[in-house]
Image (cartoon, rainbow, N blue to C red; front, top):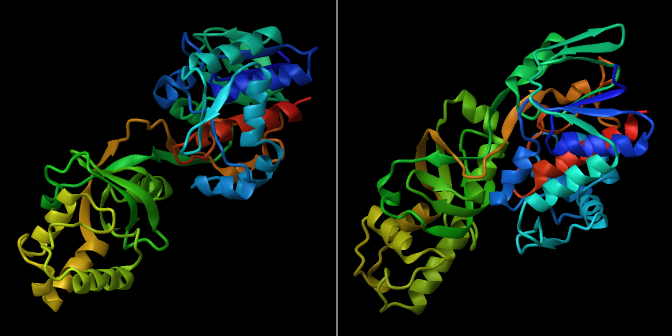
Length: 402
């Protein structure tokens, strides 16, 4: 029987095993991995550069990036958060850098730097790793976990860090844990609309997007026009926060877009239009776009409300100005389907959070069972936040297991 077994050789699994081994040098720690390779998601994340965390120094600010898990992670983030992660890797010789958007990468711009650091540290501490051990069954009897993979294993301290694994979720359900149905998170919206035709690649830096039928559904940020519809941080935020609800609607819903959010709401945008009209009466309305909008999008919205490009501001009547303002601030689009974002590795769903004691990340029902990472119903926006939740949960498990 092994003293401690970690299932899943990803970020959370390696980090937990390292912390456990460091805290308990006299106890053997074993990692079981179903694949032949370890740390696969670490290797490919961030386009192969590994966005390992984010430059967010306040726990109160950090939890705002977690559509599911924000309340539960507040305490854990006070114990181990972004600055601690950076310090941990830098103490082991990994030089890091903070990019303009707050994402943290190794200076090497190579995820192999992070992978090698974790593997070297695990090896130094005597952590044993067995690959190609796909778990088929877990039986819990008299405080002992009996596991069947390619080989058989037993332990009284089991750490599950398998990420979004339906097979593992089914095993945990059979043990008595409740599971939130897994659904995709972080996806783009498929939209077929004449206003977006041939505008792929155009982006607007500050946009507000809402789903009218959902309360408090405002998301803000850059929005990108794609071949399929709309993407960018503003869209991805909305897809993440409402992942279960949009799944339930089969990704068939309406959104409202305020393209002029850099200026404000409809009343403020109307005021800005009126001021510009009074100051530039002889200019063509299509000649100088406002509100940080690309020229092609500005002209397309004018076309949609049937305002001729050659019309000068002085000749724009009240109805035309109102229609244009409405289109700038409340463009309504019908979404029919989704597309996977190029950096999507995130699933909403997993072990319900009320099943977990977040001071230890141990199951409330099954003593000796610990869980961290995306096996839990915790997910975050892009930017290194999902990795941070994994590092934090793993670190606390490592501190808790004795």
